Every structure is written in C-alpha cells, then in structure tokens.
Length: 438
Ligand code: GLC
Image 1 (cartoon, rainbow, N blue to C red):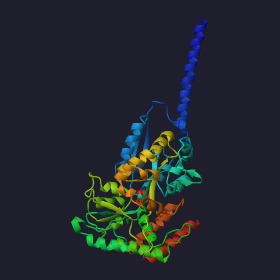
Image 2 (image 1 turned 30 degrees about the vertical axis):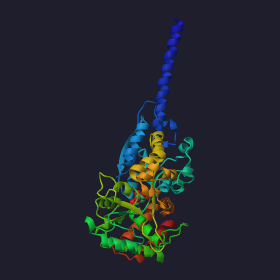
Image 3 (image 1 turned 60 degrees about the vertical axis):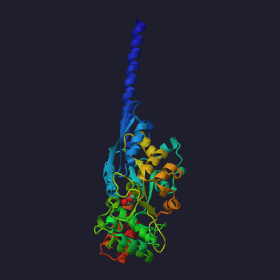
C-alpha cells in the first residue's frame, strides 16, 4: 500500500514537472520575440504548425508563389503567408521603417533592396544571420561577392543575396533588326519605329521621382564617364562628363517618342506598356524577359531580345540593383524564418526564381544550369555575367535615402525644365556634401 501510495505521488510529481517545464519552454519562446539572437529553440515542438509571414513587393512573374509552394511542400510544419508590399521600392522602404520602428513582429522574413542593409542593420530592424550561416555550413564564397559585401555591415551578415539586377535594353525582334549601339542610335530608331505595328511609343524608361529614376540617372551619367559619388566617397556629380549624361537623360525623357507622362512611369507602368506591345524598346531589369514571355499577360511572347544599354562617350553602363532576404529582428519565429530564407536564397529557391521569374542568380554556379539557360538564353550569352559584375553601384551609406532624395528631386527638376542639367548638378553637389559632412 505504502509503495503504491509513493509511486502514485511520484507519478503526480513527474506529471507536474512535465506540465511546468512545457509551460516554461513556451514562455521562453514567446518572450524570445524582442531579444532574438538566432535561437534555434524558438520554434514550437514537433508536429505544431507555425505560420510565418513573408513580405516583398508585388512579383508580377509568379516566381514568388512557385517558391513558396515548393517550400511548403518540403516543410509541412511551416505555413507561409505572403504579404504584398508596395512595388515602388521607396514606398516599400517607408512601410518597413514604420513597421519596424514600432518593433512589430507582424512579418518574419522580408526582402530588402541592395541599398538598405547598412541602414536597416544600424537601426536594429534585421537579425544578424552569422549564427544560422555557420550552423548550416553555408559557404558565402559560393555567392557573388558584390551583393554579399552589400549585405555586410560592422563585420556581420544581415541578409542573404537573392537575385541581382542590372539595367538592360529589351527590344522587339519583330520590329528592330539590330539593337542600337549608342544613345543617339537608340533615339534615331525609337523615332522611326514609333507608331509602327501598333506601337504608340519608341522607348520606355522609369522617370517618375523615385528610386528607379536614380538608377536610370546612374546609367546615363556613367555611360558618359561620370559618377555621383566616387569610390572614395567624394561627391563628383558636378563634372562635364556627368552633366553630359544628365543632359542626354533629359533630352530622351523630353522627346516625343516616350510617353508624354513619362514622369509618372515606374517599372510597372513601363513593363505594362511594353508587354501590351506599345513600344519597340524598354530599359528594365531582367524580370522583364519572363514577363514578356508570359502567355497569360503578354502580347509579345517570343519577340523579345536583350542587349546592353546603349553607349555614351564612355561605353555602356548598367546600374546595379537586386534584392536580399532578411529576418525581422522582432520575429517570433526566427528559426522558421531562417528556413524559408535559406530555401529562397539557396540553390533550389534561386533556380525556381530564375526559371519562372528571370531573376539573375547570386550563385554563379547556377549560370551553368541548363534549365535556367533554356528559360533565359540571355543569361548564357557572353558578357551577361561580366555585365552584372561591372554594374555600377549606388552610394553605400546608412543615410542613403537622403542622398537618393537629393538625386530624385534635382533630376526630376531637370526633366521638368525647372533646372538646367548644370544647375541640377551644382545643386546636387552642394546638398550631397552637406549631408555627407553631417
Ligand atoms: C529594382 C532593383 C532595385 C532598385 C529598384 C528601383 O527593384 O533591384 O535595386 O532600387 O529596382 O526601382
């Protein structure tokens, strides 16, 4: 009897310990939210399904849906809810800043533009990934080093490179016999072709006052041998070369072969007009290729080729863009967030993204993958990877948004004729110097 009583007591004590330890471990996982340090025990026990939220701008190509579908298939314990953010990178940036300044845990994983890591790391919005990278033995040398270093700040890795963007010229093979070599050739062809075969315009670009205008301006300026800020951090925009580039941008944005309201065009307005068959030429990022060949959306399937952007006096120049994935520092599910991030930025995810979305991989080995090349023959063309590597970066600074705003304002004024290119360059020089001195 006594033995029985004792063993009953033992059972009750054991049961109590179990219940208490379960409670305390779930408390740990929820109190973990604001002090994330990459703790892999933050997930709930096996069998529990966790929902994480992944945010990025609208992906017109369908690649994001395809990646999420495959990830969920391979990770039955993780559900991914997709949160669509504004497509305009500046508006998207501001939405994240508002959310993360308030230490919100409403998103877990999100994509960040190559120009944000320093700012987001310094503000404490994103989780350092070094622990996860080491634990899963990910070799950062497998990645293209440009985006890797763009996501490194204070010696830590804040995001994983997902795809690289570089500005390119897409043209209609049914209208254009030879891609224009120089900006002047482009102008001649665009004038001649406008109106042919139902086109309304000759050239499409992004000239709204927003980040995309900065990338178009970087390309014009660099193709004439200028720059905004050089590699030593000196402001060099007020040079004859840079002014020549700005003048060419202004001339093209004011010609009668671009839409009259080109100062409202972002990527979306320009890619829509292009796939509607309204123009023989467009300057855009690689995703344009997948979109132009999407039977469900495009009227120009099979009629699109890619070339380097036209040359100025100093050659052709592409702006470097691209996106990386990061984990919200306030996420309540950092481990699950990492699993999704690792999948999307690893070989399998990038392969889906490249095939369905024409997003250029940040893992150079994928350029040898035949299925990727079959889907995007231009990835395999000589010079494509070299062009990616030679692409011109925007200034790297934690206060990049302020620098960008100065460029956006004055280039817009020059397009609108409110400032000459000379005046715009002088004003940018003065204002950028003031910001950088601070
Ligand atoms: C693309 C680029 C990004 C750039 C943006 C500008 O999304 O990848 O780096 O800032 O376009 O609109």
